[in-house]
Image (cartoon, rainbow, N blue to C red; front, side):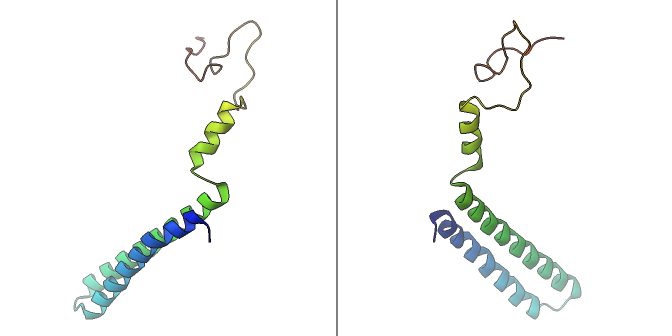
Length: 103
């Protein structure tokens, strides 16, 4: 098992444990409003645990934080900006330190 997915197991376990106790409380609740609220909270906890799992899988697949890959792409000079006009300096040349051309 890859390390980021392994680290994601802890918050997933906490969220699912909390949802278990919320559902346990829903069974003991007497009012319909409190039961509906408890079910909504449990569903939100399930969705949150799914997002944590998805984040762990994505981090494993991509090999680290998403921004790191984008920064390496930028540092290699591969940008998505249009080509600069001839005879003028590109504002993105030095990492965006120059001012953009004024129209």
